[in-house]
Image (cartoon, rainbow, N blue to C red; front, side, top):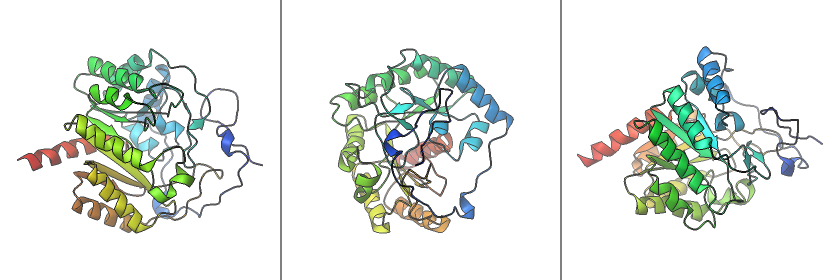
Length: 319
């Protein structure tokens, strides 16, 4: 039996995904040449890591094992993951730890704001673990973090990548009232794969969540993303595009799923760069203001540059 061990934190060795420990190994095909990335070794990467450590913060870049961490951190771009490093969900694709989370850190919003200032971020991305243990799913904490960043860095634009707040009445409204510039919530995969990939979530609830943001505040950009290579069919990806456009989502990201460990869902296929390019073309024809589709696309990759393009696209439509 293989035990998945947490090697990313300084705590004593323990199962990182206890719910996956007894699963048989899932074998993925070898990575193609277009997936390769360089190991992070630059001074900029080290500086970003030090700022993150000094403020006692968690990043999804590390916790999820993002392949773009070297590139992003070299530019002092980090995605902060708030409300702890332990998630109450057990998605088959995700490398974030699962279990019972600790209590919220009331000082975390200020720490995130301070790190945003030290990194000199013009655009910051804040995500979180799922906190099904909290009455509001952590919505008030997310809103407090937005307000803290606004107070410390008034010119910084803010993007939040939120949980689905399933069965948390009034939670979404708290986050929208704090007025992030971009509200992101990922669908992750097509509906037919939810039971095996994202069993704790509900596809149409997530679609409705994104639609509700626009109903409450049409000025907020909405964003969502999926992974491919999990066994989905092309026509299902196109249907997801239509569902998101029906919810008036502005920005779509599509990236290749990469297996964190052999206990996670296997990669069923590596989608070629040409196929990603085709998805991007089709998505633009369906009306998205911004599309990012490539093997290494992730929700927060190039988020600042993409936000500028998103604003420009909206402005062009308004003229």
